[in-house]
Image 1 (tube, rainbow, N blue to C red):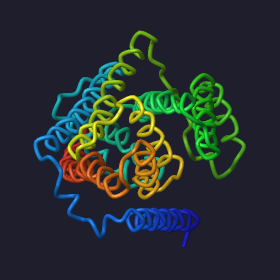
Image 2 (cartoon, rainbow, N blue to C red; image 1 turned 180 degrees about the horizontal axis):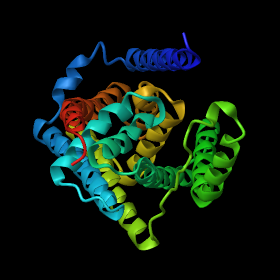
Image 3 (cartoon, rainbow, N blue to C red; image 1 turned 30 degrees about the vertical axis):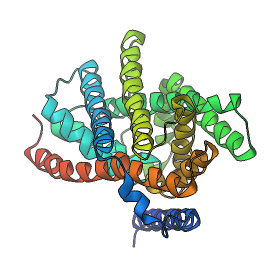
Length: 318
């Protein structure tokens, strides 16, 4: 067995361990919430409002598709709505089953194989997507400072702030970093065969603002979705406070590196909802109902679209 095979197997094992750990955490919160004895609460949801929440999730998907189409146009590749939908939605499956959503790199691979786009251009586009999502979630979560700060919350926000700072440094010094990597690769025998002729193309500021605005709309509908789900269970929650807690729970899931943030996201959001006065059984019902459409429903869509993406890659560049 080669070293690369060993590393691949170790990564798969780590992914499985993390996912199982997340399931254990989720099971703990479900058991402690008392919803197993009061499962009827799940059937008390207001169906019209729940359908409205599903529509909000579909709006999130739409803005992600539009953002990718917009980014492609900025990097000199015009793709149709159908193509943008295939690559964006299918990537939701690959991103959510991998730690830290690293599976999102699939979009860059798709653009290279299906449209002949430079791989680094695709990675640059993904960088803009992820960076602005993190920035918005981070600043939304920082609203906790006006409520109260606890140890674990401070640590998590500090970790995200460090990640953002590193991303900014990486983006600002990317040319120097790539030049250094290319120079060092020539001195390492194992890397001499690998081409490091990479260049990250930065977008002008006026175009970057467009990505930010689209991302704000995308996350805005995500925030709206959880608020509508809570309303469907009879709770009219403070939207600002809910946005803060929702952002914190998403960041907690990302920091945990558990695929889908299973257990960590649900558990933290359930805890925050009880802090807002929601009964423990109702809080886990709201969280599970919200995650069902915002994560698992979207994953099923991604899985279905991934079949179309595979067929498109077989066809080759457009």
